Length: 480
Image (tube, rainbow, N blue to C red; front, side, top):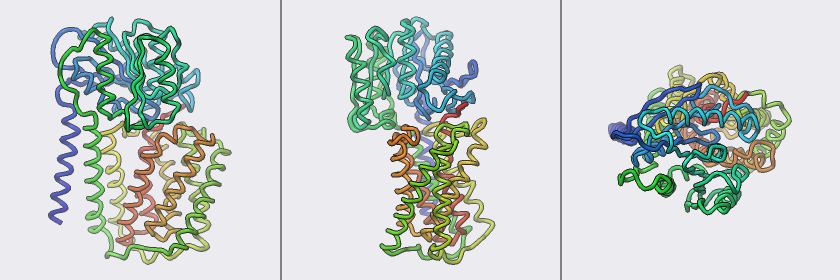
């Protein structure tokens, strides 16, 4: 126990140091201008400097792009990072379920105009030297804005989703950056836009995909080099801080909470029990049944009016999880294996708030905005209920067998990916499959720990569902 506590302290201290250390040096302010939350990052020193507005992608936030604030401020730029409509702390909804409609485009351009205007108003910013950096949806938004405002000095578009936002005439001085592991469409868009003018360029960052491209040191070096050249040379010779520092800190905090869950459950749960198992034939049967249930769930969610939920994509995913869970529960009522005796101790309920803190704190401090605002509070409860039903059914069908639980989770992800590819739901789902897989693995680990202490099935389901639900409810954009 002492070794475990020591390890927890080391992980917590290391994670906190990495996250706090990433903010050393620059001065930071958080304000709201015309309803748009803005993070302002200023380097040390006097005099007017060029300014850079940084825009996140779909389901992102200013916090997700914070490493670019660190990088650019270290190189002498004043930086404004914004939460676009429906994202992060911005309670104004994105007008539509996607960012490609006319109304959504207008909302994004309006938010960018607010950020640029605020940046230009700062006394330490040269209003004639402004650049824009954006990722994915934000890359399209900043490219479109630069094309309409030739007074923008330079633009960096990371993972640009479409070439239609640029023409052969505008914008000037545009760098497109794309990850080597991204889908071909991103590279095609980046290459097509860069080929239109001599003052444009494309950079392919090897070994990274749509999300990890944001943390690649090469992405930050290329961004800084492009802006330095556009503004007539580097403002400083300072090195670039490691972009993944906050992310590494979040990983250490998450690991600490995961390890800490074991002694917590051991203290408040029942006597240790054997880990449930199953035969190969039983697991194969469960996998087939889960596949059939998920396929029906994916089709049903497409037919139902899931867009009534004011949260993009999440309505479909929640209904998909709920229908799949309901079908599995029907099967479990007839043929579910025995889950054994359970201990229903009131103290086990403390696992629920622990699960919420374990997911929310690392994500918010080290990755992206994870505090529910506005409608996200009640949406969180609805999505939680849907995933809790799915988790409860999975526990009942598998009897807590970890291998069978992983098989059900794998089927859930594969069918969801197929739904995105075939147009049953938003294609953005494919881009976030890696984090979703990680969350489902985390949920399975917690299920194993709770089952080993004979926790009731309903509590195991509620606790695990929090881990998956929280990021969905707080990162997918609010829509109206």
